[in-house]
Amino acid sequence: MRHKRNIQKLGRNKSQRKSLIKNLAISFFQNKKITTTEARAKHLRRIVERLITIAKSQDLTSIRRINKFLNQPSTTKIVKDMGLRYRERNGGYTQIIKKGNRKGDAGETVILQLTT
Image (cartoon, rainbow, N blue to C red; front, side, top):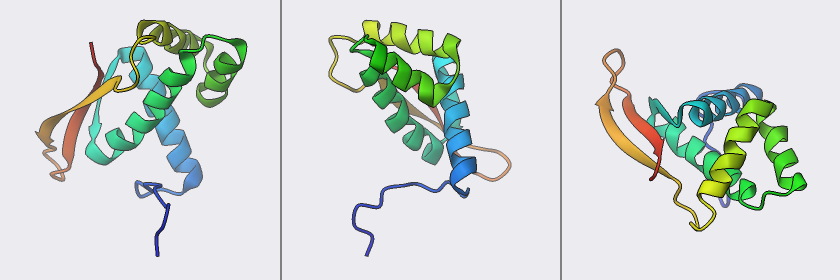
């Protein structure tokens, strides 16, 4: 039975998956939008929305928690600013827009971007 197992493996082991998500999150916060596969975008959306929710409290503990995950001070500052931007919103900071299939392997690609 698979009760409460909601980890998407994305075809990688744990360390590679952690590195992939971390790099996707850094790219997303720096560019405000990213094009990737649907499975990666759905997994990344959970992480990104959680980080923005943490950033809404604007205290030292939350900044350290964000920096622990991203490990990049410039990106941590961007996330902190997004926390101020979405202070009144109770979630739903990102949206997934379907783009179509990739040419090489027909993988479903999507655009993950911030909502306005």
